[in-house]
Image (cartoon, rainbow, N blue to C red; front, top):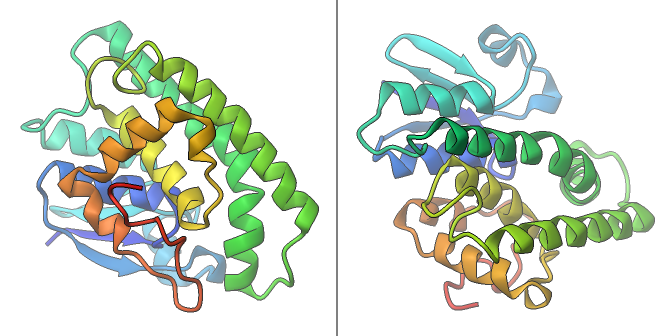
Length: 221
């Protein structure tokens, strides 16, 4: 039995779900709320973070190891390029989203709009939201520069870099914070991602009391 411990609007969890679907792997989803610091999650991952994948008796925690594990254990649908330089670029972009984007965008927008609400931490800070949106525009401009020269974020083909990038951007899109019309190259790339069958599970996500933006699951937005 394969089980993924996740939270629906956690970008890393969404990346794991997306990768599993691209690999054609069935998985039972177990929703977890890491801020509750529940003992069962800490038994699986001493750091208390998501996602955590249980597969064939193994427990793999955190998004980097989960993605690498899926690539190694299920190579039939490769999501990494073959060349060493190209693989390094994919890993660089995974790190970019997990560290830089996470710290400059998610730490503002997701924290203020989602995490505070989920944890009853009070009202969102309007200035923090404005800062997060400014940071998001900077990141979108960077991605647009990459996509002016590439079909995918890391090169000519769909890779784990596109999976991790789309997972992060999809959270901002759920909240209606992506100014796509200002960045047509990113909009075109993301529209292709939304049309992938493996992405449909993410588009079906809904948080109680917090519906997504109207265009969120529209493939022709």
